[in-house]
Image (cartoon, rainbow over the protein chains, first blue to last red):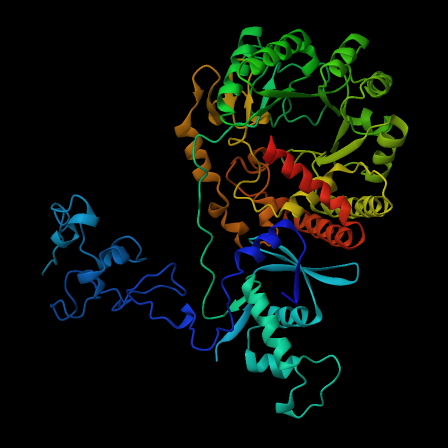
Amino acid sequence: MNHLKAINKKAARVERATLREPQGRPEPGRGTTEHDVVALQRTGLPQAPHFPVGCSLVFSPGWEADRTGGTAGLCQPVERDLFDCHIGCYWPAQVPDQLNHAPDWTAKCAAAQKDWRKIDLIFP
Amino acid sequence: MSAWVAREHHRFEAAGKPFVYLVPSAAIFALDDAADSVLRTLSARPYTREELAIVLGGATAVGRARSASTLDADSLDAAIAELTRVQAIGKAAAPVAPTPKVIPLAPFPLTTMVLNVTNQCNLSCTYCYEYGEDKIVDTENGKQPKFMSEETARESVDFMLKESGSNKLAHITFFGGETLLNFPVLRKTIAYAKQRAAEVGKDVDFSLTTNATLLKPEIIEFLAEERVGVTISIDGPREVQDKFRVFQNGTGSYDIVAPKIKELLRRHRSRPIGARVTLTSGKMDVKRIYQHLTEEIGFWEVGFAPVTTSPNRAHAISDGGYDEMLSQFRDLAYEFLETTVAGRHHGFSNVKETLEELHKGVSKAFPCGAGLGLLGVATDGDVALCHRFAGSDAHQLGTVRDGIDRQAQQTFLEQHHIANKTDCHTCWARPLCSGGCYHEAHTRYGETTHPNLHYCNWIRGWTDVCLRIYGELSERNPAFLAQFDDEEMKELVS
C-alpha cells in the first residue's frame, strides 16, 4: 500500500489478511461480488437490508388471507422462504398464527432442515 | 455511480502527521495527504468518485485551476482502493454487517485467580467500595468467614491449576480486605502452590495488593525471597493520603505506611513495585501525587483510578471532575512521552497499559477478563466474577470445590457481550472500553450489564490522548513500542 502505512500489529494483520482481496477497482474482466444478484442466493452476509423476493412489508390483517380473501396478495415468502419471515421478520403475524389458529402448523416438521416440505400453506 | 462513505474511525494527528484508528478492527494506519483528504472529505458526507475528483482533484469540470495540492485521478483511485481495503471507507449502499456476537468457547483457560484471603481491613478508608454504603457483600454479619482457611486456600490452588487448562503459567493474586491480615495462610498457600505446580509441570506466579500498614522486616524478606509482585494502595502525599485512608479512629495512615514502604522498596528488588492511587472529587493533583510517589517515596510505577462509588457521594467524581482528571492525565502522559523519547523510564502505568493495547490492536468483546480468564475467590471458596464481587451470591460462578458453573458463566458472557450494549455501538472507543468495569456499572446503575455512560467522554478523551502518544512514539521512538512485541512473543512461547 502506498497511501496507508500500517502502524500497529493489528494494522499489519489487516494488511496481510486483505492481500488477496483486491477491492474497489476490480481488474478488467474480473467482477467483484458487489453487483451480484443476492436475492435468494445467499453467499455470505447480505450486503444491504435483506428483504426476500416477494416480501410485501405490508401487514395484511388476517394473515392467512389477503384483503380479497385469497392468498395471492400475501407476501410470497410464506410459500418458499419460511425462515426469513418466521424468525427474521419484524412482523411475525405475516406467517400463520400458530398460537390461536394453526397450533399444529409445524407438527409434522420435527427438524426444519429435513422436514420443511411438510410445512404447508394454510388456506382461509 | 454509487457514493462512498467513511466507515467508523477516529482520525488523529501526531508528530505533525495524520493517522486513523479504525473501528472495530482497532488497526492504526498512518495516512498520506491523498488518503487523508479522501477520508476527511467522506467524513462530512457521502461523495461519488466523480464528486471526489471534482472536490479534491482541482475540478476541471467546474473550471477551477489545478493547484499543487490537488489529487490526480490515479492517486485518488489508489487512495480510495486502499481505504476500502482496510474498511476505512465503503459504499454507502452497502452498510456494514454488524460484528457477529461470538462467545468464547468453554472451557476458557483461567489465567489469573484473585484470592480474597480475608474480608477484614485494619483501615477504614471512607470511600471504600467494600465496606461503605455501596457494598455488595455484608462482610460483618454475612455468611462468609472473615478469614480464608488454609484448607480453602489449598482447594483454590488445586482449582486454579486445573482450570488453567493448557496454560503453562498460572497467576495467583492475593487480595482482601487487607491481605496481610491473613499472612500465615498467604505464606502457606505460596508454598503449597509452588509444590503442586511443580508436580503438574506448571509455573506459578504470585502478587498481592496491600495498604502497607502491616509490612514488617520478616514479611518484606519473604515477599522479596518469593518474588511476590507487590502493589501498594496509597493516594499520595500526607494531606491527600490522610483525607480518606484512615484508621477506625480517624487518624491518617501516611506516617505509618511511608517508612514501611521505603523499607519494602529498599529490600524488595526482585520485582517492580507499583502504587495504586484512588482519585476522588477533592483536590486532584495527579502530577504532584505522581512526583511524590516516584521521586520522594521511590515507586517504579504509579497507576491511577477514579473512585468507584454511586454518584451522590461527596467523594464521587462529577462530570467536571472527569474533565479535570483528563487534562491532568494528558499533562502527565506528555511528560511520559518526552521522557520515553529521551530513552528514560517513566512510571505512569495508565498510559503504558493503554499503549500496549493500542499496539496489539486489542478489540474487546468484554471490558475485562472477569468471568473469563480471571476469577475472584471469596473466603469460603465461592468463585465470583472478580475480587470485587467475591462473596456475592448474585455474581457467583461456582466454587473451588465443584469447579466453574459453566451454565452461569455462559449466561454471564451472553448477557455482557458488547453486542448487547446498544449505547456503545456508535462509539469509536469501544474496541478498548467495551462498556467499562462491571463493578463500576453495578455501583452506578445497579446492573453489571449496563455500560458506564457517566465516563464516556473521559474514556474517549483518554483514548485520544493515548493514540496521539502512540503516534508520536511510532515516529520518534519505535523501539519503545517493540517491547510490547516481545511480551506478546513471550506469552506465545511460554
